[in-house]
Image 1 (cartoon, rainbow, N blue to C red):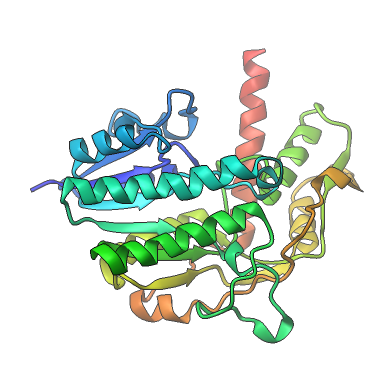
Image 2: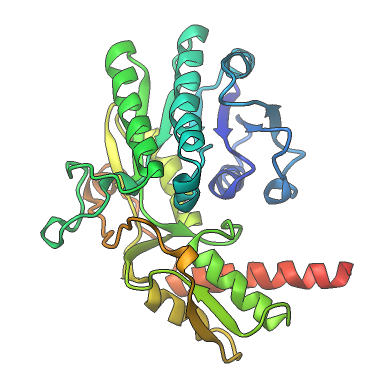
Length: 328
């Protein structure tokens, strides 16, 4: 019997990699469904688009979501669709809150009305912890929330909705608080990808050899997106509904140290310039997770070296500009 897996936001960074991973399992009993909006780009899934059942769906339109769930009747839901850029949340706080909180309500209500019982992965964020103190790292799931952006507030709301719908209605929801993850296809506004993209542009002669940066002193713990989606698959098969799990990599460093690793992968001499527009009104500068709970439940460990993650990301942008040059 076919098992229907629904990935909201399948055209995005993590969603497309998750679909890739599920296909790599070669399980003929899994059918992948994904949501897209009419304006969603499909570059990330072009190589698998014929294998996916794509559905037009607007998460902020309750009827749209109800029709989707009634049609697909998923056995597993990975809810990855979100307004996920922190800086955008400062300039568009209402849109961020509506998309991430109301969109999640619409999804959970649609599951209730369809009278189905899927396992639901709600993707919260390490940003809910906000600015932790040095004596509070590594960060455990019990850490107090101190959200430092509208995005973080929206994820606190989503996180609490997951708890409430499990408590009130018995929905089988598992929540993750994922720490920084990156790799090929990462959106250009996120720090690792923003740096890699600028290096690729400089190498291609499109940009002057000056790389714009924000706060380089923040400490982040990095994971590869391909390790991340493997973790998500284990999550829905081995973890307990009603629980929350930190997931993160094993490599911690400042953003500046990460940049230096990227710069070591190019022969170009590049100057660094702080761009005030890239500095957040309030920042989160210390993110080191304690992932013992998740690792004990699943046996998961990161496998991909961080240097490979960065090289693959840089090569992704190099290939992008090489293709553009050929089309010109």
